[in-house]
Structure formats: C-alpha cells, structure tokens
Length: 257
Image 1 (cartoon, rainbow, N blue to C red):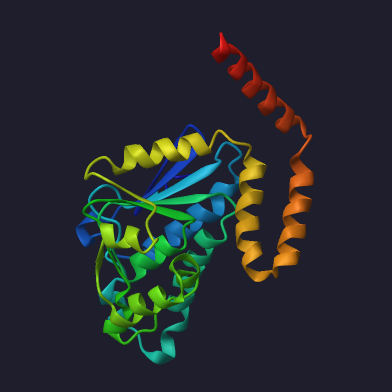
Image 2 (image 1 turned 180 degrees about the horizontal axis):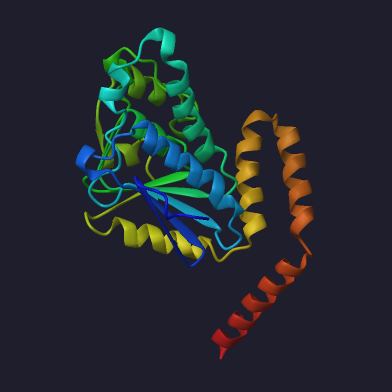
C-alpha cells in the first residue's frame, strides 16, 4: 500500500496492526471531501495487506473529529448534494464492512460526522476527555440510526439522535457505546496493546468472526445456531487450530513445573 500520497491521514504499520490517524489538526480533523477520500482509500486497501490483521482508527490523543466541514456543506444545494452525500456513505461503508476488525480510539471530540465514523468501527475506546454527540438534528440534518441502535439499543439511539446532546466519556461508557476509558495521554498505547494482542490470532478466523457478528443480526435464532455450527466445524481440527492448542498445552505444562 502506497501511503506517501496521503495528506490528511497517517498510516503506521506495527505488529500486524495498521493505525490510521486523521491528521487535519488546524480544523480539528473536520471531514472535508479530501479527508473522506483518503480514509476510504485506506480502508479499501488495508485488507489487501497480508501482514495486517487489525486496524485502529483514531484522530490522535487530542482530537477525533469535529465532524462535517461546515464550509463545504454550506456550499451545497439540494440539486447538487448527491456526490458529497455519496462520498460520506462510501467512507462509512468502507469502515463498517471492512473485513478486518476495526478498533476506534477517541482522544477528543467526536461530533456529528466524526461520531458517525466511530459508530462504523467494531468497538470503541476513549480518553477521559473524549466527547460524543450526534449533532445532525441541530443542523436540520437526519442522523445515522443504524448501526447505532444495534450498539446501544433503540431507546438510547433515539435519545442520542433526537436530543443532539453531547455525552462525556463516562456517559458513553454507561450506555454501552464505549468499551473502556483511559487517562488523557494514555489512550493510544493502551489501544495498541489490545490491537496487537488481537493481531496475533489467525487472520481468517478474525475476519470470519467479524462477518459472523454482522450476519447473525439478520437471522432468526435457529439459522444463527446453524451458521455458528458450520463455522466452528470449518476451524476445529485445522492445522492452525492444532498448532495453537499445542502451544497452549506446552505453556500449561511449563507453568506446572
């Protein structure tokens, strides 16, 4: 993957983890068309990198994203908004349907379109100064409700979208939107540790598990059980399965003595 042409994001590879950092600090990482295009390109390209098992999306320790670039939106009219809207949704889909696990590290404010980006990730961690808000309603814009309701439930999703209020990190964790909170300045190192531990697992098993989690939501219970049985049969007894069992047994044996 050629990362030299990116102007508004940085991509760093380490220990089978690709960290994608939105980098437009002078605008608090506002999502201009150029920023969106680069994020989309990264998330479409990274799954093709065989040495990448997990992706982290962040805006750094200070920001996540202030959301829509309001100057860009102000230029739009109803008759010419299709390309801009399509660009946002292409970016959303590139993250949401990325076959690799995507972890979001939120260091600061994630508002409106910035909040929507966090929603597309598989799970989220925040610094204790992070803020979350789906502020579209305040701009007479309709918000993204799906997959939000799948993450926090329909009642909470309605509250968040219809009130447009800002939630701090503790509130976001309380409603189940954020998995954990870290002190300011310690977010990225903790999230990288989680990501690099995950990245040691079998790549195909990671992607199948993510796909399963998305597929089950649209199935009845009986179909879900059958899909899970079939996937389990696919992996149990495989070479990778045997190797990992052998490694674990050897570790347990050593720890006994």
